[in-house]
Length: 222
Image 1 (cartoon, rainbow, N blue to C red):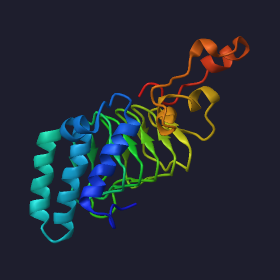
Image 2 (tube, rainbow, N blue to C red; image 1 turned 180 degrees about the vertical axis):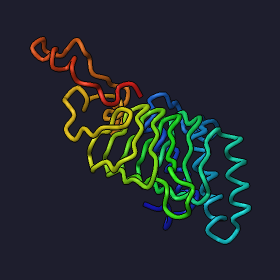
Image 3 (cartoon, rainbow, N blue to C red; image 1 turned 30 degrees about the vertical axis):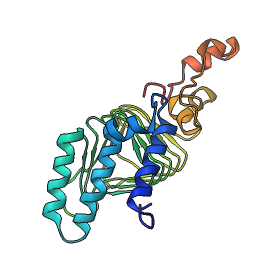
């Protein structure tokens, strides 16, 4: 879940490639490298995190605040980010000091990985690999978000989410087996590499229409 054992240049190239794959609006690697604030925030964090871990905590904190002003994304230098983390749009994202984010995680704008206590120690979430967190979602406290989980937009998560489950609502409720329509929503499609493809509601058989109306689509409002 860490970004070590690979050089900074290769990591940066990997970040750009990740954005190309996961953002259907991406047009070129050059545009991403020059203008994607979510990518820039990750780059700044790697520097701040290195300073923090090498006893230069004041400089790490100052660097993170510089990055916050430049990108609109606040990542504490003590937080741990894995590889190929992509922050889409990014404005308003906050990641706390003891948060741990796995590999291939996708975060949308307005996401908070925050705490619920002022006490020292582990107080922020641990997010597994390949997790998608929808816009405006709040994941609070030392909870564990399992690998391949989905957090719906504007959800407030204060309990653990199992591997592969979907959490929606305030407070978030777990949907371990979302419907076929939910499984084909924006977040799932992004992970399949087809973020530009969305399900056609008109294509749903009439016999299943009533059932779908009663189901809350988990992620299509990202």
